[in-house]
View 1: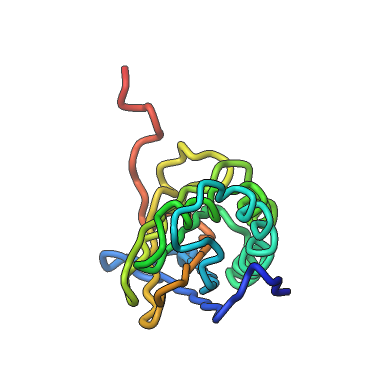
View 2: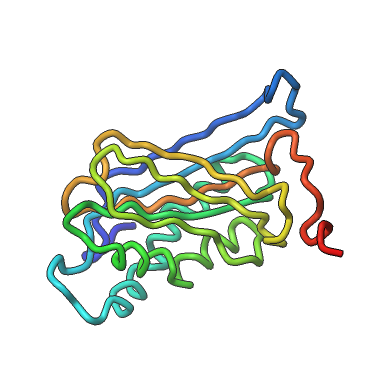
Length: 188
């Protein structure tokens, strides 16, 4: 599944399940799955004006590498989702943005998750072991406050120089014990 342009060093899979929050049972337990690909930065490290052509060329392949697998790893219906890119220190923030803000990438995950909303995203340049906080929102209605949450992924040896870690995350439900008012309810 690897092309000449997309070179993947490793895939990272992570699942967490929250069963208790503030001493209360969370039912159903909140499950969050993350799948990340650590790839060689496909963009030139010196300035390049056109990032879109290459992002278009690898977007679907990258989406297929991690999107459907994240949904399968969750093991149940997706209610919330998000994405992120962590770029090695010799790359540009725009390199990660070009990869994850590309419909050829995002549509693969959105379709696998059964979503219609835009995927919330994070992108940043960082050292190896930097945390990536991935925002999640409801897959059908981004105004559903109970599903606004963040999950964190840390991979000790990633990203190395010349690498980008691209991740997608999916959750089976909203925040544990969510009890905020419906979006707009406080406006009279």
